[in-house]
Length: 222
Image 1: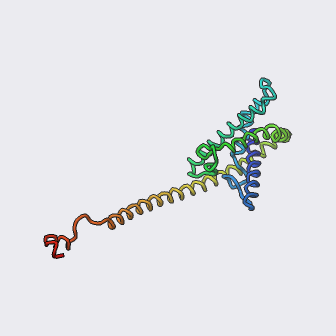
Image 2: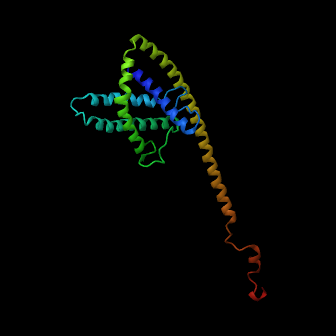
């Protein structure tokens, strides 16, 4: 069931983010790392919420009035951890960033920021109290054999898309590494050229031949 939740919320997150970005740009934008309609970070976040936060929501030891506050805080922590780790892994593997919050206040390495963290806290409450209960009820009504067939089909397409996306990203990484090497070489050549240009423009400390030739003559001759 967690695997099915992962794929469902990956697709739902992709649709939500793509619509949001498309409205802002006034054209359709396919968001995400993959070619297909999935953003795995949303599926990962949803499963992390279910595993880490469902026990708090269902706990009788926590007063009902305090549960939303505690879920809000823990949801921020879980979401930030998922977003930060995902950003680091994507950058280490592919030398590229899919989001950057460096221009926003109270950010950490441009990977997470306070404003988005507050959004994640609100999204946690919406997810746990409004979104997931009907989704869980509907999915639980699907027969087990049908679930396995759906998962097999989705996983096959997802794996093929993932392999293709990784191959494309690695090609981009090679291209970026080559461009970075060319940039370093160009900077080195420019530095050498500037040094040569500076040496040519710098006046010689030794007198020229004409000065040496007449240096022994009396000053009144000049």
